[in-house]
Amino acid sequence: RKEVEQDPGPFNVPEGATVAFNCTYSNSASQSFFWYRQDCRKEPKLLMSVYSSGNEDGRFTAQLNRASQYISLLIRDSKLSDSATYLCVVNTLTDKLIFGTGTRLQVFP
Amino acid sequence: EAQVTQNPRYLITVTGKKLTVTCSQNMNHEYMSWYRQDPGLGLRQIYYSMNVEVTDKGDVPEGYKVSRKEKRNFPLILESPSPNQTSLYFCASSLRQYSTDTQYFGPGTRLTVL
Image (cartoon, rainbow over all chains, first blue to last red; front, side, top):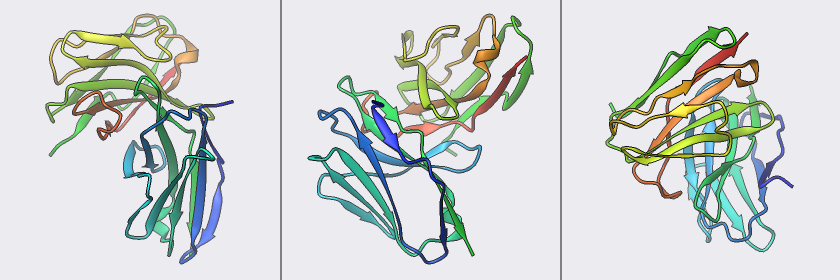
């Protein structure tokens, strides 16, 4: 089993839609969780950290479910500019980062 | 502007011809690392450095070398490139080595080894 698993997608959604991605992780001791955004052929950039109580940043909401070992990202009112690949990132016991392979989102007009 | 720069951005080379990809950051970050990104495999860490003269292997170090003589620079060296090193390479830096510190990535180097 991979340490971090994501549905590769693509998720094709119309503008204005709400879309959610999940990411599962295998190490129950992981403490740090993040979502990074990667535009096509460009570098990953931090979108948001994921906190135990869940957190929101504008149209983006991140949730952590420790019991089931998954994190989620919810995007409300999708924009064309949200089209990108979203990488789930989790730390290991040695505090290194493991990157998921990403979920591709395509928002269409 | 705070940034991580990499050069070259694109490189096509032949098997066995030594090459160096440079990486430089202007944020006075202690921690720097190299990743490769391949379809279906995600980002995998090649080498990392916690500070000047301190480097260590990541998950896929075979065929690569690094050095950290100055805090701002962390070049990646391929002594004898092979076709299986064809990949998209990213340099990254963070303030410290902790996972909670934001990783800042360079723009990437697309390497093709024929």
